[in-house]
Image 1 (cartoon, rainbow, N blue to C red):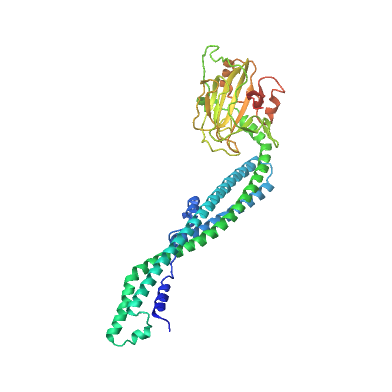
Image 2 (image 1 turned 180 degrees about the horizontal axis):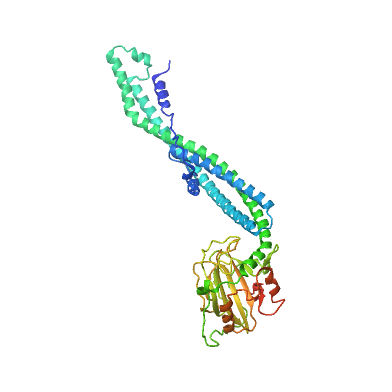
Length: 466
């Protein structure tokens, strides 16, 4: 026959069993869509309620579907690339799609890595909380047992239930039952607190299991995402090589059409009846580098083929661009947002240049027309007709027009000994950034190593980049 203490403790242990009801309401996908980053962060830590744990489980399902869709897009793009012909529009669309995929995958990797850090940190916190609650539960349990033992010694409550029911008389039974009631009354608050702490501990243990599972899944998903990113980057180079070889034809087609000057008049220099010599500049020595960065593509060819009439200097967004010499601004316009560029984008003048500037200068007797393409929209610091000094801020670098990323595209036209006033007059009547030297493959027939001025110079040499 078991003692009453054992019966009481067994009944008490039963109160530790926690049953938590989970919400069965399903969240629609649109409650997560566009807020993935916030939900990843929210579900990378222990939840304080079973309802939120359920929502995190629903988000996990949604996020897994997104990952599968992304994998399918990567595979689909790979098939499209292998089937592409030399159609410039299809190539441009594929490059744009590829760039979007890279951004999506890189964002996913960053979110996963942040999630891994959060989960690891929260598992450590959960371990401390679970252990602290267990110590509290053990201490309260010890207090209850001690009190029971004290009462048992006083009123004989360690007797079995059968002995209580077989008391000598009614008064004897009442005395023993009253002792048991007093034990329950004194310890009820402790028991309730233990139940509350056990519920909290059980949720934390459940969340610890969920987070450990999530941690391993996130690590696996991140490795897959990194492989996907590498695959898409390889696709990018294949696409770019194909596109660059066709781009010259696109440039020539877009930029060789005679422009209606009235449509860009407000962004062009407009000097009438200016006295001769009004814009003579006395600059000597080599032109200064207009922007500091690394060379991503030299003139007059791309590294893997395709005509490239200028020099690309790779820089971060909003890197300062300075006037390389004293001069005057022929054209300045910033119609598009700073980070809006993509392959095949025709915005800006000349077409595809985004936000652009052209200025005139004269150095040691030689007149130059200097172009700056793909600039930022903000801090555009000059206007057409304005005189500028060497080292003066022109604006900032951007990612505008026909681009694959932030950079500054530089072109240099050597005008020989043409007077500044004459050059201004000519630009006012033609608005030709190429100064008769053409675009695309036609531009290669008019480089200074082949013919005299006006002709195209290597910006690398003029600015001292090499």
